[in-house]
Length: 143
Image (tube, rainbow, N blue to C red; front, side, top):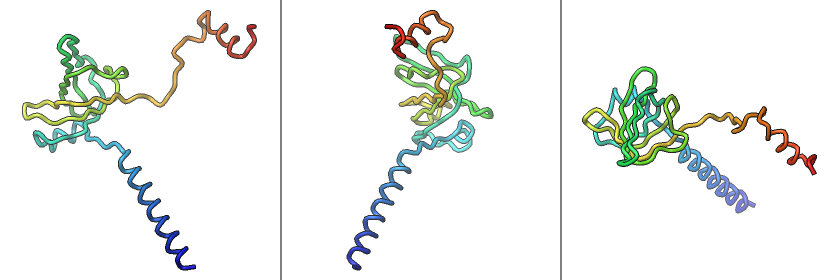
């Protein structure tokens, strides 16, 4: 009987550890521009999050040079990246970037993750002419 209790306890502990490890690895922590400005160490890797400042986004498609600024409302950090921005990336939208603080006063990003709203909005206008026909065919009314 004690073998079953000990075996069950070992399995329960292993399962609890796997759940804990999975949750802690999937959580994405980032510093804000204000926190980065206050305690940045040049060359250290950071994950920086904030809103893309309107008017700061500049992208050169030929050289793939991308520059923009992230803000948390109190501080702003200029960011530079080499590559194509994600589809959801844009001004006045949230973004999280991975990279390092450069001693020249900017953040060199190696990865950009665009944040998006959890609200779903249909990509079409419900007053469009084809909308009613599409709904009819999906319901099976338009045979």
